[in-house]
Amino acid sequence: MNKMARVAGALFLVSTGAFMTGNGILGPILDRADILTGVYSERTNVIAGVFLELINALAVLGIAMLLYPILKKHNETLAWGYAASRIMESGLLILSLTSPLLLIALSNDYIAAGASGGSYFQTIANVMAEARGKLFEMAMIVLSLGSLLFCYLLYKSRLVPQFMSVIGFLGYAALFTSSCLAIAGRDMGPVLYIPGAVFEIILPIWLIVKGINLREVE
Image (cartoon, rainbow, N blue to C red; front, side, top):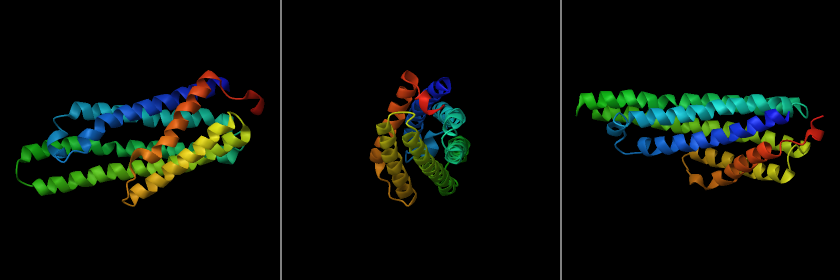
C-alpha cells in the first residue's frame, strides 16, 4: 500500500509540474490578440505545451488508479466517486487539448487566405479558445467535487495528518467557487487556486517521504 501511495504522490508532483509548464507555454500564445497570426509560427511550442498538458491528464488517471485500492478500504462508494471524478477530469482535459491543435491548422489557413475571410477565421478562433477555457473550468469543477470526497476520506481515515485534509477542504472549495465564477463570466484570477496548490504540494511530499498510516489501512 505504501508503495502505491508513494507512486501516487510522485504522480501528483508530475501532474502539477507538467500542467504549470505546459500552461505556461500555451497561455501567452493562445491569449494573444493576434492569435491567428502567432499560433502557426509558434506551432512547435504549442505542440510541446499540449504534450505536457497531456502528461498531466495521464498522471491524473494514474493517481485515480493508485489511490482507489487504498481508499476503498474505508468507504468504497466515496473511493469510487473520487476515482470517477479524476477519470472525468482527465477526459475533459484531453478534450480541451484539441483546441490548440485545431488552432494550428486554422492559423495556417488564415495566413494562406490573406485578408479574405478574416472575421470568419477570427470568430472560429475565438470559439475554439473559449471552448478550451470552458472545458478546463469544467474539469476543475469535477476535480474539486471529487477531491472534497477525497479529503473527507483522508480526514476520517487518518491516513495522513488531519491538518492536510483541512487544507484540502479549503483548497478545493475555493477551486470550485473560482471555476463556477469563471464559467459564469466572473474570473477571479489565480488567488483562489492557492490553497489547493498548497495541498497538492504538501500531500505528495508527505506521501513520498512518510507514506500512509498503515495501521489505518489494515
